[in-house]
Length: 285
Image (cartoon, rainbow, N blue to C red; front, side):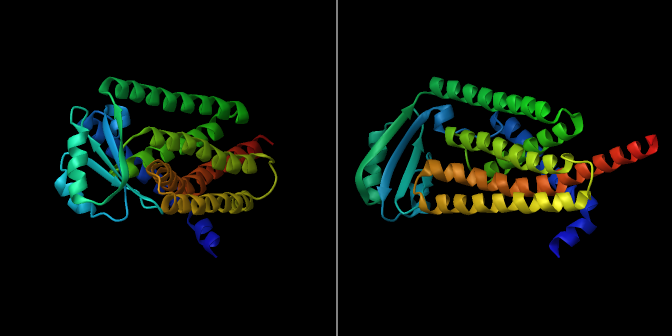
């Protein structure tokens, strides 16, 4: 029933991810103009100190009022940790003493310090890793399909997934960090996987109805995506680790975006291409 509605209006549905990509691109341009980076960097990539404390309960709003100069995060797992990010030149011992007056801390607080120079190096390496992974992925896709249009559509889908995931998570207040970079690299791989599944199904034989091939690939692809999303939601709510929470939320956003990108846009554009290609072949005969 749902697929029949999609099949009836597929020429309209395929434009939705393009709208998402356009809006996301505007968000990234705005970030670059205002902050100098496509996504605000956390202390790992800009320099600073991170104080981690374990608590039973905490009033996050009260903490933000008490420490207006700090970025404060609270994990939502079984073990509740509070992470307070402060500038590099600030004395962490003063902050810890003040923390003990406003929250009930379990155990000893831990502090991690990253210098601004080291943070800049990490940021440069992160950008190189992201660009390098994308280039290698593109080469692999072109070698695999040896056809410009299908390969370009797979790459376009990956670009849309990454740009949209960065824009949405940035809007949610998530900062660029090494765990976020890991999630983005993983998202590149997963985006390519789902689109290779679709493209391979449509190109493996010239016979058969294109709509039926898309439906078959969609059943397999959506089952895989939903299964992974269930695992990611469990990791987000249960882990109690800020790093795992960052990775899971970026992947959740990226995989949700990947569904319309793959099954609305990429499938529609591939269908256009195959129908046009089939029409030209028919004229030659």
